[in-house]
Image (cartoon, rainbow, N blue to C red; front, top):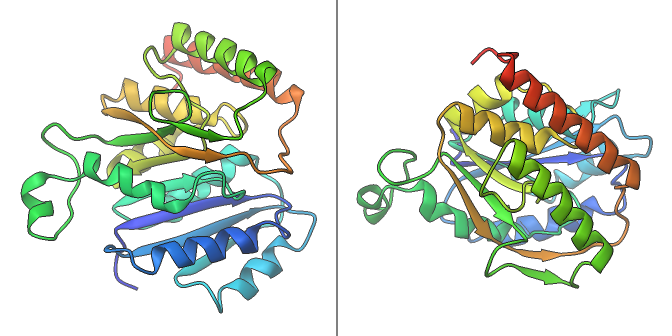
Length: 257
């Protein structure tokens, strides 16, 4: 396969029941795409038959590949592995629960394109007033959530975001939406040195992007709450710990940038 424009990375842990729907929906929406793509599922040491299901789906879903980890690396570790194994000009990771459909990527494309090149039908990235990192957001004007999050989750999310903005990323209102895209250069440099393997990996990637001077754009997306989330209260405490670790490493030059 020639070098694709878009690489889609899907981390998956015990997703045998949900991932067929996600992959079929993705295949349907991408069937009319104007760009080339690859889909990489990173099976993160699942206890169920996620790997077998994805292997079988490769007969029905175009350009689908599987990375099968026998041991769990954590979501951040799985995303990093998929991003660095990908070959696309743009590398996007998305959740396996279909909360944000792949056609939302079309909203991101203009922020990566140079006008002169897009007018001629080709696609290039970077330069001018365009961006190196484009992230989906559920917290800015234009975002749609179905159904709206319960109030306790809204308060918890806003509280954690306030801490992130104070310590690391002022002006970014949703660091945790699982729909983020990076240019090839930014992806390889950021994830080449990232170290957080669990819930804070999104923040680490964005903080490293900022430190490296990459331009970040936050755009509204349509987000659908799917049942069966595996996120628990303990994740909030792990997230706070990760934020402190990232801040400390940046203060002490703990990253090789």
